[in-house]
Length: 496
Ligand code: TRP
Image (cartoon, rainbow, N blue to C red):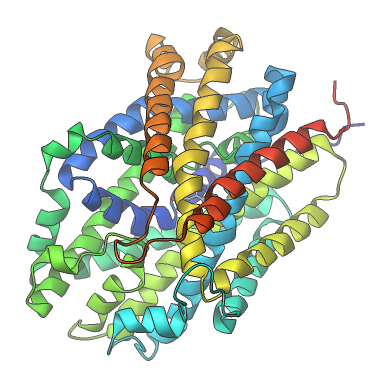
């Protein structure tokens, strides 16, 4: 006999958990530097277009699919058509790889939380991050052993994730009542501090001044779509899994709008907190804002901490606030992918929940050790590039194509409209069937060509050796697909 499916306490706990998954480290460190890198204020245009044409329609699709089928991504896609099950596993695989390094970024945050009490980075923020925290080696080939403080913090991160998720969505619903509002309030504190500092407005000018020529560049559009997918946790099977714990009668469209807008609003808001503070940094260092801005993942660990260390008073407190913000932002995104994997496995095989959660946390910890070596940052950067650029876009594209062309889209649409307050019309079909796949398809092709012609590098000075891009990029990406296909082939309990 089938056991009763787990249920959210209330609509509020579902929506909060979904927002918790979406709002993560990506909103605070990724969005501001991506926006700056791709045209400042002008980036908001492709970003907004991506939100409307891909973000919201796909969110509706994922919620609708999960809720209608009452199962996670692989099983839901199998119900659409048997041979598509692997796409669901692929989505979970991409999400899992992201969670391996995402948890390591959280581990850095734990380290920094500890260092905040003494503002340990104040003399040389860049050197501190590279030499003390990461103990960075010369290149990806030189692993150079584990960095123990990061390893311990990583273990702590997975331990906490285990306890948040091992009992299922009922506990999750409670945890997110803290981990979602808290960072938003703390961001508010950082924002008020930021905009009241001298130089803040120059910083904001940088964030908001549009460079319209950027709109002609396909890279900018790809970055905007990538950021929307990453940020809204779309294409990972997360939203499908979360929605599968909603009653079949719950409103789909409304929930999708609330989640998407809350997430993008938070990103926009976080940009103000970050850029006003960067303006202050430029003011204190007597340099133009463009000089102090980092265009990469070090923003949260070098530039922002440096700015904090120059505050006139209460330096420690702002350090603590900032890193607690990042940790609480990250935790609910990290456990959402674990939930998606657990849901996917349990829909197919009869395995006790705790065992899967435990197994996943252990495997993820072990896999994360690669990023705790002295070459960790390089591998993190390479895998992030491949997973967020190709992995996500490919899964998103397949989702649109499968649902749009191989399934009676009408059935899903009629179902969604029968339970939702806001009805979706022809626009949704156009976005899902034509526009989004066309944009994603073109950008995937263009960027594959580009990657082949021009190898990826983190900074201009240190090119990666080509083998490391093959291994960390194409090989890992291929392995994720292979695992998906293998999992599909293994026989599960037959449900029908
Ligand atoms: N949405 C999260 C953010 O903005 C990132 C994220 C998406 C993620 N999918 C994930 C993190 C899977 C871990 C695992 O930060």
